[in-house]
Amino acid sequence: MKITVLILFIFITFQVAAQTDKATTKRIVESKNFTFVASTAMPMNSAEINNILSRMPGANGGASINLTGANYDVRITPDSVIAYLPYYGRAFSAPIDRDDNGFKFTSTKFSFENIVRKKGGWQITINPKDTKEGVRMNFTISTNGYATLSVSSNNKQSITYNGYLASPKKAI
Image (cartoon, rainbow, N blue to C red; front, side, top):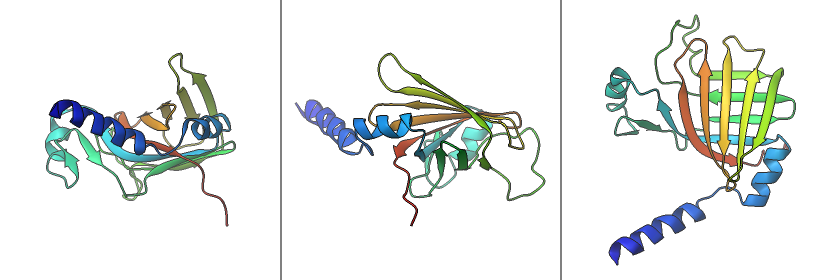
């Protein structure tokens, strides 16, 4: 009985925590106007990386890093992609500017492919063409607005972010 109540409580908590409803999620995805808010980062599975990450504040057992409250996001509009994400993992070449780590760029030349998944949700692939390193972003979005973002790069190992979609902020 206790296990059933616990499972029900967890299910209700996740349903209440959804950031957007199904209609809002559909509207913002189809309009290509949304913000992906990252809540965790999961670097490639490597023994050295997991060993280091397990010692960092906010690490969850060495497998993922809690980003909640850190304001890391990717803003997508019909004419631009603005990424501000941290990077944890192995880079194949060091950046010239020490502050130039992570995925921090603005792109106005990019391809956007949106595929509706058979079981609901969307698979979106974005390929910015005007960034320093070849970056490819793959979003898997649920109907409730939860999303997973996998970023691959020519200069870094792949990394995955979990988070949610939010409506874009209105300009003041």
